[in-house]
Length: 83
Image: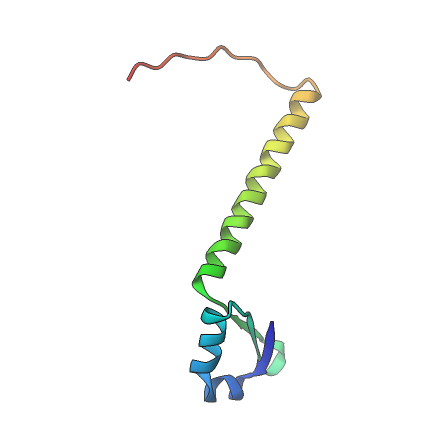
């Protein structure tokens, strides 16, 4: 991770964009009043969103398993579906 102020990034935008995409670095752009932003590659953003989605899904599964173990589940017969 690298941090730079807004003016430095603005004056060297290509360099910082290349660092984000070519070196998979996260660039923190510091701004006044702590309104900081982050520059990262789209691949890294997609991976973060995928990881978050997977974590939320696993939490739902764990909650469901805990409910079943606590006896709060309702058994159902599987329904055969013809294609």
